[in-house]
Length: 142
Image (cartoon, rainbow, N blue to C red):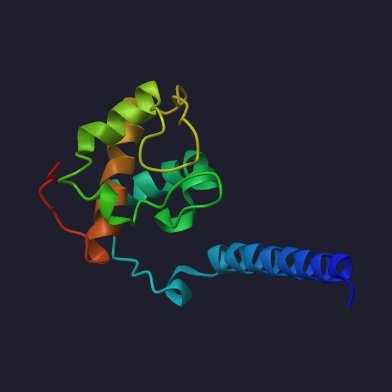
């Protein structure tokens, strides 16, 4: 086989594998939480209100149940444990936006339509979800 044909076939194969991998990762994100190994706790009433606010505002980027998307990181990642990102960090991010610093998704814009009460409820929802999935306070060391 001529060299240009080998290069073309290799490039085509890589493109197909890449698109198949992307499609699979999107499909995984769309599966129910239990099939992704995510434990959904019996949420407190405050966290249930937070889940509704999260689903309306945050899930489009951070994924259902904090699993992340191609637009934003997952909140079930250890970097979001309370010792590294305290509740106030989440609150400031929603109020003021935040510059990209852990991930390559770009800056997070402020969410001015989310009320202070909803922010607190969302943080409670995320923390209860994290705790149910084994995330605990880990001291931040840098």
